[in-house]
Image 1 (spheres, rainbow, N blue to C red):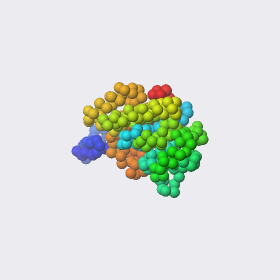
Image 2: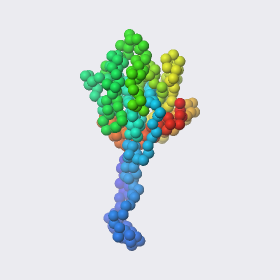
Image 3: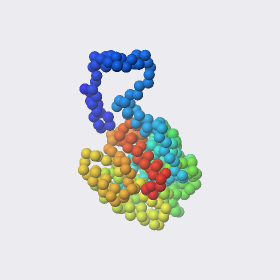
Image 4: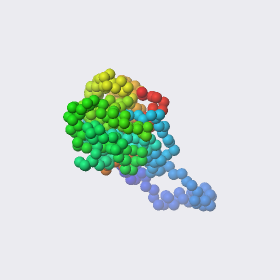
Length: 332
């Protein structure tokens, strides 16, 4: 018996002996005469490898499942002022999954750390143009968007280290809170189905620009106690921006990330969030996954790095929920 590891889970496989295989072949020939007369007949194999291959093909959008596209472009800010809750991971993988299933998606990296740009293989050299040039120098989004390698229908406006000083430079500019919104207004968003804005882990001018520019807020919540502590402050800031700068903005989606089913705390946090926010919370729980953590080091999302992993499947299901919720108007 061999034991191997697949994305954190051990699977046992009984290695057949050669004499057992020969015996099985002889029995099949005795009981099924057609096995000799039709050796080329199609046989549907249902093995762990075959099932994993079917899952990976489905995640990459090669199955028969087609997802609905929204009637107009949805602009979604992925925000949470607490770091390490999976904002960038969620934004990148939801965007990649939607693009793989026929939607046209743009990711705007508004975090000076530029992790979303790294995960999507964007050029982040000092000479490259980035979202900084849009906010401070009025460059057009169309000129800054770059196609993402290996994923059709997916583009990214990268972030470079220049963005770290943007908050200081924005202070002296006119209408500093709506610079990103003005850039989106000048862009023909009918060419896109989704725009995901990856916000920094703070509540400064960059995050305010994202909230003013969007129509929906998506909040990733880590299934741990500290993730709930800062949530109240985020909700208060959302209400302030909504009442003073963007009345059309709503919290439309909450994603529970880094779920560990072995701990009681994770289940308690999930239950508490569902009890408070109701239908805004996606049914899909995104588990902790080694593959999700490894993918950015290869300049990829987990959707292309390991399509059959538990993390990729979870993000695909979360993206499917978002796509179908838009079709029926749920969560808004």
